[in-house]
Image (spheres, rainbow, N blue to C red):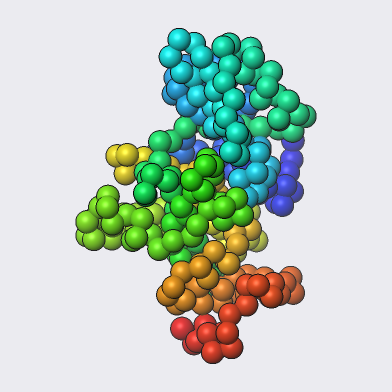
Length: 273
């Protein structure tokens, strides 16, 4: 089946298959399969915990964390509600009521690092500059809601400076090494996707760190929201992201929502920074 660029870039499954073709990206992609009973059974047996997510979706909506516990018991969490089951059949029946006729994926569960007992992940913003090359323009941490499994801002997550989330886990020098690695990974992803789909100009790469500090690509968003960077106290990163975001969207005549606007003096700085 042929996809238009817009359709393909909305499909998490299509993007995953495309990224798996790159040897440098492949090691950072969690095992991802189509949602069905057989795949759910085998992946739970292999990993103990997986995420079931819509193939097409935004803001973490519809994402469920599924676990196989001791004694062949099962459970899943959706938003703030957790349900338990005595059999795989009961689990699958309940999950399938949530998924309906939509296409869903199963992704290997990553045991994310925590900050103050709350999970967090990382958004790497990668954008094309005026001359064409890709740049990593912003990196930010996303601290999850204390009772939810997703970290998205629209689901109650809190955007935070990455160094604040990492300070209890890594030294300053190790943090710098990690940030460099994540920025380089983001640029590699954008460059690889561009070979197949040359017209997009920005991506937001969501990356989770496990307890061994291995980065895992959770999702690649080709319509990333610049507004989360405005939550940082230091506005310099937001000004750069916004400037590049405007550049990417000026041909589409897209304007920044009122809530996303920054002060006139900051916009002047954005033009010159």
